[in-house]
Length: 201
Image (cartoon, rainbow, N blue to C red):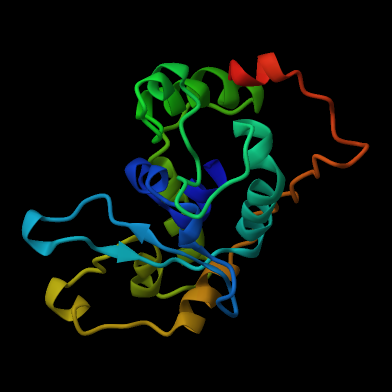
């Protein structure tokens, strides 16, 4: 989930609504995520963006759908499932499937950042991080914004602008995240994880 935040520059409400089927692996030169916009005026209907999937993010999403999802949720993912269903027993008992901001932020702030020895930061800072890195890699400002926003700068001009997929892919690939590949859960080198402690956070 954190990889999706930082490598697509998405808002919290956008990531939680992504479905398994929204990950389009067969698009070239990079795969694609279909992300419904988090902020849209009432008169504009549903709007979405389709950011390219950085190869590093693709590695993690492929691992998640092949191994991580079933290990975490005790069942294989289906096309209509949220990519990251809630882990909250309380929400599950109420029949809710989407994560709440509170449950994710609690794990992020109280457990995951300290474990990584990182200072506190907001989940929303992922958008600033991606935009800063893409623009620092010499991508044009409007191309960079097209990755993270449904509106670029000028609302009228936006309606008549379509960026070439290859241009967006090139901008995304320009960033070297130096992120390791995910470990295989079937690997002998992967640590044994206690199921009860995993459910707790």
